[in-house]
Image (tube, one colour):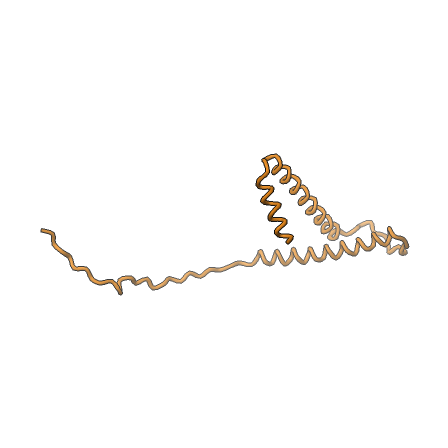
Length: 121
C-alpha cells in the first residue's frame, strides 16, 4: 500500500514539467541534508567531551530538566550505536575480495569431422 503510493507519486512527478521537478529535487535534497546534519551533530556531540564540565550537580526536578536529561541519554545511545555502525562499516570496507579464474578445457577439435581437401579443376 505504502510502496504503491510512493510509486504513484514518482510516476506523477515524472509527468510534471521541469520547474516542478527542480522544486522537488531541491526540497528533497535540503530535507535529506538537514537530517544528515542533525544525525552528524548527535554523533559529534557524543564524541567530544565537555572540558568545562563541573562535578555532578544535584538533580533538578521539572519537565525541562527531565527532558534534557532524557535527550542526553538518548543522544548518547544514538552516538554509541552510530559509532558501532561506523566501525562495522569500516571493517566491511577494509575486507577484500579475491577472484580465482581457472582455465577450462577448450578442446573443440575432438568432435569435429576431418575435412578432405578438394581440388578445383
